[in-house]
Structures are given as structure tokens and as C-alpha cells.
Length: 399
Image (cartoon, rainbow, N blue to C red):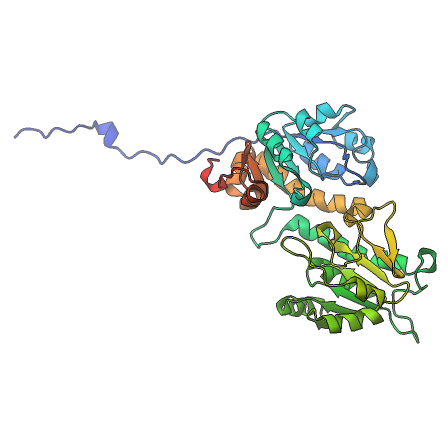
């Protein structure tokens, strides 16, 4: 009987061990922290303690001299944390990862090396087509921290800054109500035998929630207006305190505005914040009443709102004090910087552990959602439609 022929050798027929993907070794990140040049921007992305944590994990960080001045962090603190202090912005922008609060200017993009990674805000309404073309030309991978969304559907950095803006809006209003700031000389609180101040809040999101918490904590009477009953119910549940709520009906809103001492504008819109308080309504408010329009960075919800600055924060119209500064968290730069730093640091450590931005983005979907450029390819449809630019779905790109 002839032996049956086999095309395979005995060794080839033996079971072989499964070949698993080998994890890439840790990557040494080279991070640059430039000094912010945007008007009245004082925040910074990493605190000295975060820098110490990153350098302890083997990463290199270059900080432009004076970058922490606005948050009262000295060059010496960053140096002691392990960062290199540079007096030349070119050295900072030569790093492979750039961390900024505001989007870089065209001149700053010119200083960046090709194939760099940029973390910054996006602020689509303040951008132009040339900004995106400049990023594409340099083949930049850009991640907008205001687009990063976690697995729970929360935008962690936007939420954190909204919390600051909500609390700050009440503190600012309390300052403006005193005699030194053209107010009525009222104390935003509840004193025995004195009726409490009345605060009206337009909107029922994160800003409104934290504004309401602060106002309630001071003893004020709070009323919240929003056209979403679901949001209003959710807000009542989270506050665990009985507050008056209503949908935005002009007659009811006007009645509350006439009686109130403070109005906080915290509404949002898809394109522009809807104007719900007309000039005619403002005319009927008390002299010395205070408007804090937190939604001014998206157009504002008061017809009388005009953009103001931190150095000249208020204007008076029809006897009503208007505070319309777009960048309220920058007023509390240190708190905002600590918050931003606490969000950024775990992402940076994870990028290093995963061996680079490509592998980190492959497993971390929140990074993918924040990414609007990948090696110069635009991956965000909203930006593409807004500026009529070519778009590629990020899921079609190879990580």
C-alpha cells in the first residue's frame, strides 16, 4: 500500500502559537506650551504640578517664558517641575505637540513643524478659511478640546468651563449691584427682615445650573426660563431646591424682568443664540438692574447686548448695567487653568502609554470626536460645510 503524499511537512502541520498584536513601546512626548497672545487671554493648558507628572513619566516639555504669568505661575515653578524655559517662541512651536488655549494665529502656524499635533479650542465662528488651509498645508493633526466628547456624551472641558461661567456670573452680578458700580446698593442675598434679591436665569443648561446653585446659596429668589420642559425638570431635580420655572413666554418673562434685580443670559442656539429679551423689555426693567449675558460669545440673548472686555466690562443702556464679556472663565484664570490641566493630563499620559496619537485615537473614541484634522486631512463635516472645504470621514482613515 503506497503512502499518501502530503504537501505539508510534519512541522507545518503542528499547531503554532497565536500571534497577537504587540503593543508599541511608550512614546516620549515633546510638548510645547506657548504664551497666549490672544487679547486678554490669561489661561494656560498645564499647571506646574501637571508638568511634573508628565516629566516624571519621561516626557519633555518646553514652556515659553511668561506663559504662566496670567495665572500667577512663574517660570521658576515650571523649571522646578522639569520643564525647559525658552525665550524664543520658535523653540516652543518646534515641539511635536502644541498645547494652546486659543487657536493659533497664521503666524504661529508658520512656526509649527509639519506633521505636528495641535490641541486647542476650535471656536469655529471666529475662524476663516485661511486658518484651515494653513493647517492642511502643514499636514497638522488638530484636536479641538471643545469637541472632545466622552462615552457618556459629555463634553468634559466645555462642561467644566460652563460651571466656572455659571458661578462667576452670580459673583459678577453681586459686585455690580453695589453702590460703587452704579448699582442700586443691593446685597445679593437674604437678610433677616429684608426681601431677598430676585434673580432670573434664561436657559437650563450647565451655566444655568451653577448660576442657580450660587444664587440659592446666597439666599436669592431664583426663577429659570427655558423652552425645554425636560431641561427644567432635570434642573429642579439636580438642585433639590424648589425654584420657579417657566417656558419662555414674552408676557410672563416681561413680568419677571420688571421685578428682578439680576438677569443671567445662559441660552444656547445651534447657529446663534436666540434673542428673547427685546430692547423694549429692557426699557421696563429697574434702573440699576444687572444683566450678565454669558451667551454673548454666541451672539447674546438680549437685544441690547454688545461685546465688552475684561478691562471695560460693562455698559449701561436704559439704566440697566450690562456685563457682556465673552471669555468669563479667563477672569478666573488660575481656577480655569487647573480645570483644563486636570482634563488634558490624563489624555497626554495615555497618548504616551499607547505609543503616539495614532494608537491613542484608535482606542479612545473621545479623541477621535475631538479631531478635526488628521495629517492635514479635514475630518469634521461641520467645518467642511461651513467653509466649503473637502472632507473625509475619520473612520475611513487608517490609524
